[in-house]
Length: 344
Ligand SMILES: NC(=O)c1ccc[n+]([C@@H]2O[C@H](COP(=O)([O-])OP(=O)(O)OC[C@H]3O[C@@H](n4cnc5c(N)ncnc54)[C@H](OP(=O)(O)O)[C@@H]3O)[C@@H](O)[C@H]2O)c1
Image 1 (cartoon, rainbow, N blue to C red):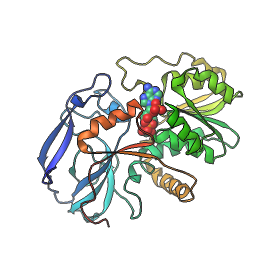
Image 2: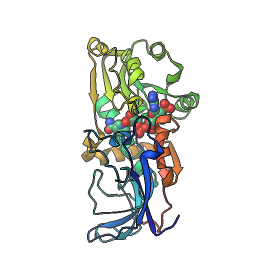
Image 3: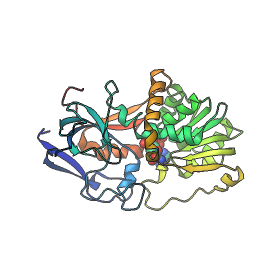
């Protein structure tokens, strides 16, 4: 790769169904020059998030769509190469919404404002445990789910970035935790490494009955990342006054037709359950609290993290697809470059 060129992976077409390589186009441009008040950043690691599939659609959502011809939006970690902003120095590691590009200039605003990563924090942590997915697990499970000791918690998408942390947090609160994931390797990892009490491979079918056998008195908290039939299996097993935390519905993100609603939604009425959706960005003022708590639990050895790191900006579309093909264990990340300057 030439190091005087800025590669930008832009959105070339609105996807139909599963995201394809041809939905993107790699462009080359000169490395941008920072204006007064701006910094030049070299991207190091990109975050991959199922919600990026929604940003590719031209429809109203919690963020505006990425426009055709714009670099794909993404959370990232980078290094300051040049600074015309008194708040940042060359060599500092920063995080923000930098997109699928090698280099960018910014004055610091954006969806996730430009933030310094303290020395000593591993370079990938700001896009994994201290990034959107770790924070989502923290607020979704602890603020909305509020599991208590002795309760039973069900987490779907449990071997992914958000689910694996959400389930461990419920364990820390003293709950019995059941996770669902695709395939025997992931279910074994959940039980043997992540400390879940039970793990079920949803691909084996009959999920409703298998949850019932583990939790005959029902589940008190259901943290759902998947939607569809997995959501129905969880609703079928609610305990009285259960809390259902709607984090996401990845099973329908590439669907060409709107998904059917849960056929058994009357379970919510019958079990007097509370169902609540949330968007983690609303918790931005409390992110430091979550980072401090997650960091403390990691330091004490009470919380483990898993990361799947692919390499090369040219592999960004394929890396995004890995989320929908279930190839990732833990947080999906793409490495773009080594630190060009010594870290300060
Ligand atoms: N509300 C918020 O603010 C917020 C913030 C971040 C993330 N989220 C949501 O949280 C969920 C997890 O996101 P993440 O970033 O942590 O991704 P992730 O769980 O690390 O990766 C996605 C996983 O979803 C599973 N999956 C894919 N297609 C599926 C299908 N058809 N049926 C069942 N499972 C399927 C795959 O695991 P298997 O191999 O187990 O199938 C895959 O590994 C997503 O729904 C996302 O939109 C919400």
